[in-house]
Length: 269
Image (cartoon, rainbow, N blue to C red; front, side, top):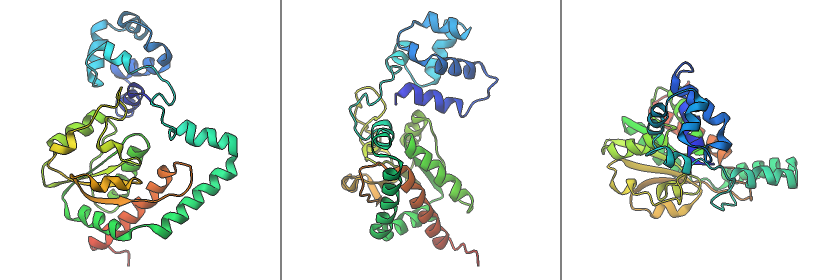
């Protein structure tokens, strides 16, 4: 999925439907297949706003200008030749192998997780969440959905952590974070830690080399443990060809919150 479509959806999820920018975002999504082909004058006409409004909105989304926005607008499924993307890995496999194969794989991965989970790693992360007053959780797309899931589950237990769907806000938070902050990164592949995954060319990400925050990671890639800025890590195993991390995250979050309650002295008894 392209950077522009992610930022447009994220923007809509946090704005009033009555605002001009909300209307511009909706219009862009409704005409998404055309954006990479049309000029700023044409998109302004479609949105019934001025070119200056489009320019300001472009910068609001974190792009340098309208040309930068257009460069990130072309939607090509699997544009980075990643065979593990959602459509190729999940939907195409369901269509070719059947629903039962997918459901059986989910059950297999859940059972394998239960048998091979490193529960001491769960404890280390849960204890850190309990110890730190300032905590945030970030990811991209399905991993960010899991970060919000953890945010809600911890809030049920009196622990309030930060999260942002907006990748620009995530990076800004990382840059400003001090040593009194714990940041939990959810990244199935681990590439969130080293690459700008949704930007053209996936340029190198350097923000983790300079942040002062303590970094904990939830990933299926054991190589993240070797990164010098990673203090704690939960490496979750899976066994099937399906990328079931969106489901496994929910279970891992439950285990983290369960142990957070223990370390924070919370009991239902």
